[in-house]
Image 1 (tube, rainbow, N blue to C red):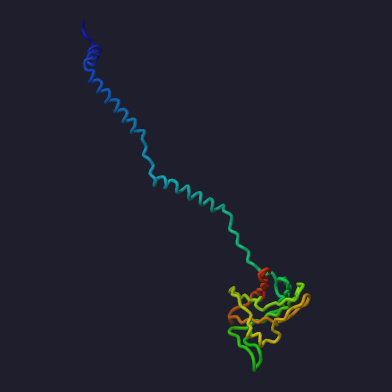
Image 2 (image 1 turned 90 degrees about the horizontal axis):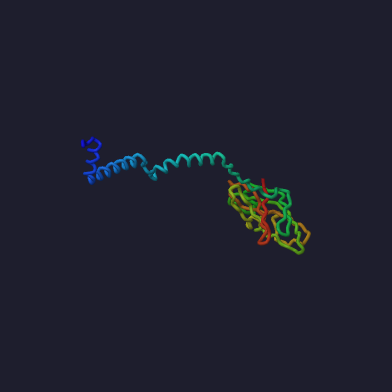
Length: 209
C-alpha cells in the first residue's frame, strides 16, 4: 500500500513523541511570554503618584481659598464712659469731670513740685452708694496713655496741688470732689482713666479725649 503525505507526517510525529512534546512546550512558552509582555504596564512609582496628585491638591486648595469666609476683624474695645458720664465702681458712683494736661509744675514760687515729664490733673466727684462710710484711695485711679502704659497717682505733686484729693471717708449718700494728679512722660497723651473696683468689683475705663 502506497503511503500518502498525511500518513507520512503522522507517522513522523508518532515516531518522535519526545521531540514533539518539547516543540509544543517551547511554542506554548513563547506565546505566554508574548501575551504577558503586551499586557504588563509599568508600575507607578511614589514620585509619579505624587506628581499626578499635586495638581488636584493645588486645585482643591485654590477653590477652598476662593470660597473661604473672610476673617472678621475684631472690633476695637472702647471705654465704657466719657467725661461727664457717671459710672458705677463698687459702692461708688464716679464722674470724671475734666482733665488738664501739659502742666510743668504745681505749687507756688516758694513750695512746689516740678514734673519729671508733665503733670496731668483729673477732676472727679465720687458718690458713696453703700450703707457705710468708705474711702476711695488714690491708687484706685490710674491714667493710661496712648501707648497703653499705666501711670499712678503722684503723691509728691498732690502735696502742692490746690484741691487735690483727700483720703477722707465718704459717708453713705455723700459726694466728695477733688483732683487726682499724675506725672507722665512729656511726649505721651493721656487717653483713659482706669477706675479700679478692687478684688470684688469691676474695673471701668473712662475716655479722656
